[in-house]
Amino acid sequence: MNYPGAIKTEDATPTAGALLEVRDLHTHFVTDSGTVKAVNGVSFNIDPGERIAIVGESGSGKSAMAMSLLRLLAYPGKVVGARSTWPAATSTV
Image 1 (cartoon, helix red, strand yellow):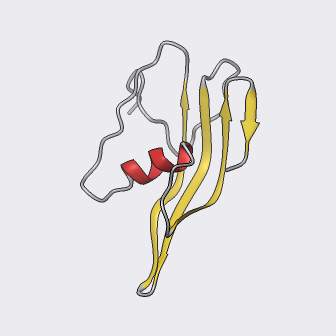
Image 2 (tube, helix red, strand yellow):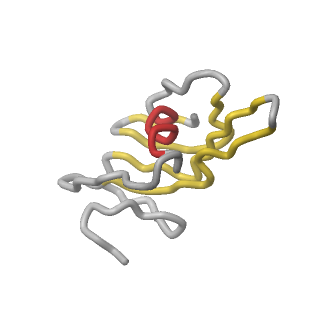
């Protein structure tokens, strides 16, 4: 479904006026017990005037996604792949 301001996944396509574009974000936590894939291929746009809400069950990766985008992810977390575009800047996380 397509709700105004909803997160767009998988089929998210870049838009010329997007305030934030995130493509294929992957965040992993490597522990002695194995690798936890907390965020697995998230893509979305936030366009001017849009409001979004990140919702999901406990442990679904909401905070890991936000901390990854802000580059505040604590050890042992690691962004293993992504491309994000912020206003007037493009970075590979």
